[in-house]
Length: 156
Image (cartoon, rainbow, N blue to C red):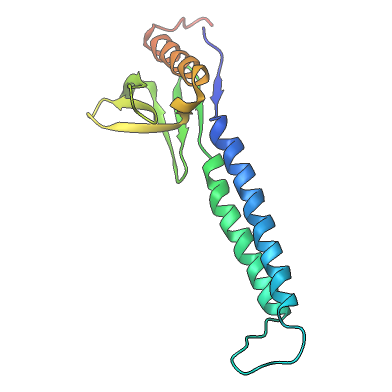
């Protein structure tokens, strides 16, 4: 019997965290620069930025960083009973009975599940740019799929 499995992308999570941090830093620097642009006498046509403008700039940076951090959400939780696929927006819980195959096609950005109704479900947690980690994850999901097809021992 195969143990429960949790898979997450590696490179995407690191990249999103770094990008979110950089976005916040850039927006804070811009907010500080806005505050300094308002010193001295006001000339005609010159804009003056105050504390509310600076706070708004920091807030926009935090919102942008939050949007980037949505890319850290993808995850797969699987056991013998089924699989939970969480992508950037939304999650889907499926019993293995509706899954016909776990695929990682050449040129595809991530793995996918083939479903019994001829549909496909993207598995963004297994990204091809993670290399062997993605291959190992697909193989582990395939083992769970195969285990789910085996008859269960009612005494265990």
